[in-house]
Length: 184
Image (cartoon, rainbow, N blue to C red):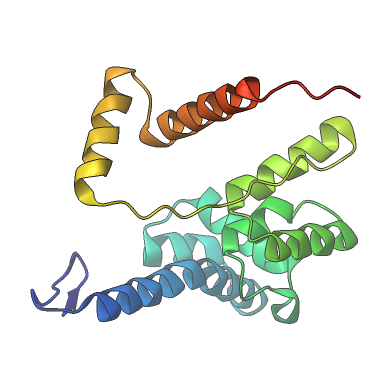
């Protein structure tokens, strides 16, 4: 059951249904940027004082509404990538059309998050070449192990992911150093 301020979920909901519900909520949330942008563009073409009215109807501030409309204007509906978020599109909206398409294609191809897309664009601007892509690895842990690792991360004042990466890097370096030297 949904209300404006709450989602009531049955206690016996199976995980598959719970995951599907999360995906549906995400699609609605992500789509709302496009919907608001398109709504504002329509308002501009058909009604005076669209932003004044839009602020009153949505309680969103002027700049937020303007950003939605600006991004929506940069991408005709047929150019919008279903597999990428509104925020992915916002990251490249200021680029020319060819660059937008290039970066969105890369983001789709490498399944980049919005933050990774931003990082790649910045790296490209600084050095001319995209940065090494980040590879996502999924790690399934039993709860006790995750709790142990979380405690170790907190003791060293790191977030869990940073702690895991640091320890894997140390283990890899140790393994490589222990290999016998190969003469050429």
